[in-house]
Length: 340
Image 1: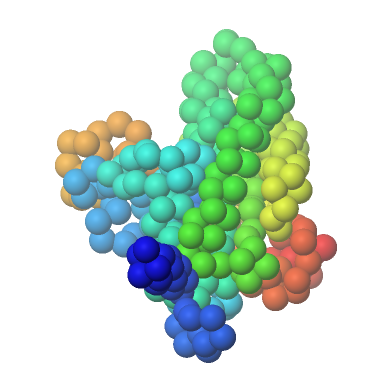
Image 2 (image 1 turned 180 degrees about the vertical axis):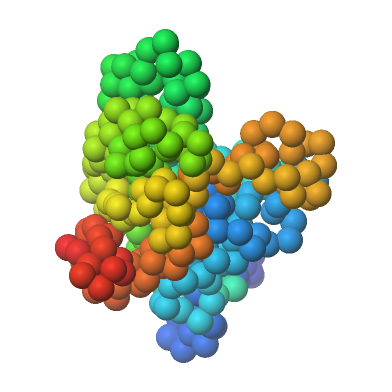
């Protein structure tokens, strides 16, 4: 009887030690890492230089770029990108889901957090939930193609607040699951930074009034203005509320590419931080016939490599600064800074 209790206690202690990354009181010698989870804006879609196996091969269109913002941070010895284009909150959470052949990002985070000493987890998600950001952009392009039809903002203005309200609890669940995943790997909440970011506006109304369509931004100017000045800021505020309710840090990207959105520079895209409408015929090389359709233009209206370098810089500044919330804004030097 006594021996069975002793053996049972030993088994429980052993199980606990397996769950912890290091023994109590020991020096954690694992290399440090920062990890990103989320969708295309975080994976680096639009920045090019995609990791092998994520550019359409065998149905994986995650488009994880070696130039993504997480790889531009200066916060740890290693950077790990788990984000995937098109992911929604369920794909980030601990739910049993599969997206572009990949499972739960939070579940994979557990393994990463056991292998490294994770100091920061960066999450950007929500746009592919009820806001349906990509579909909304497609609707606005369709409205431009048909000048006699209604503006896309007409319908969007009546639906947008409800979409954001429906999105919020899903992102909250994903963030709580990220906390749970880190807990499974042996981390206390105070031992790392968990940061939620919002999104930058891809287009602006400050484009060439006549040529912006042929230049790669087939969106009506009033629709672009609504998106930049109303829809994107409201999405950011909804995510700010999510961060406050879940007790995580928040970094506002809504004005990060201001003045450098797609087509903001007119006929020459140099200096812009958002891709214009981009049709990539090389997608057929990697994805074959599966690329026909949306995947050919999948990289459109996403931050480019230059933007990711600046966003990574801002993330680094924000985390090092220790504030709970800030905005990424361009300073007099033309670079992004975290402004509390």
